[in-house]
Length: 454
Image 1 (cartoon, one colour):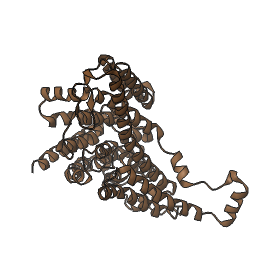
Image 2 (cartoon, one colour):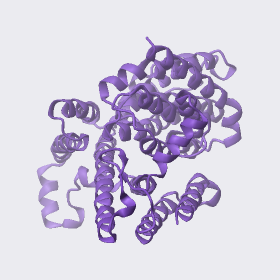
Image 3 (spheres, helix red, strand yellow):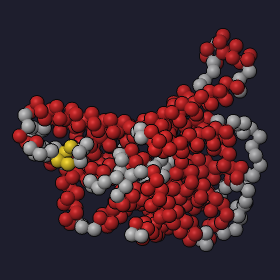
Image 4 (cartoon, helix red, strand yellow):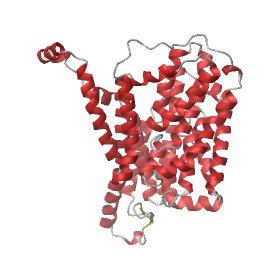
């Protein structure tokens, strides 16, 4: 039964990694794998020799001597435990995604376009790199990439030039997401899973992440694609810009940044603070949205519901990437099935015997995240290693998984979305951008190890 479970996981994992070749959305194999794995665990509960207590982070002694009823009760308790932990992550992400969509509803991100007042390619490169680095730390690397490439498309007409800028944006966005507890799904998982704290994560990763972004950007600034000026750049403020856009941008970003502070003060799970922030932003969104309607509009809405007032919160909720949320649910619960059987714990023990240097193991994790999705890799590492909160291992995992994906266009959510928006060719990225990402990854990793040993 254990062999079959591992086989199902491997097949499901391959289907996720090859989603572009199979033309099958990765949420489908993730959900199927999750359901099948837990079904097999339920069917074979009587034969399994080990069971892992996720709360105590150790194998349960004498599990094989438990009665069938006791084992089924333990299965239900374990499933509820993992469902609760997964739900914490998902509701946190749902709240953050909704706030971002509310900002976009008011065209708040167009505010960044007004900061761009140069035609010099080298200056534009650094502007976009730093915007990606900072913005991804606040609203996550995926959303930051979408926002900046959208702006890029409005100010640079030449397709080839945009491809180079997009490549650096991917590197910078992934680097920016690695040092923030809300900047990437993997760092959020580690933060909510009580593997890292916000303060220590920032303390140990801000410099390595900054170098991971700055070194490739510095090298690229001397390359031919970033020399000279661009032909046309939109510098005039758009007269049709939403008058509440800038207010909602700063209000939304400030509310997201408030979440770690709320957690530190109250010691409540982060999703509670995110729900509070969402409600706060939602109040202003409703007020500002209604103020754009005259009394006659509202009276007309009362008479004709088909043209009635549309809540910006409802509109934003309808635009959330639910496939991504379901994928996270499927993969996290699938990995939890392997963890519950003690497979990840025993696998980690074997890995430590083969490769006693954990730094090498974690760096291989980073390289692996360029090939397959970093979410299941980090989920697996959380089950494999039992180090205490704020151990350097967890900080290195956050860095490696967050930045390693930049080495291939399909290795990160930021890369995949940029690939779709600009139709970036896999081999073009591999030839022109991958080596820059690899240099940045290596420099940041060395910096982390030096800082850690101070």
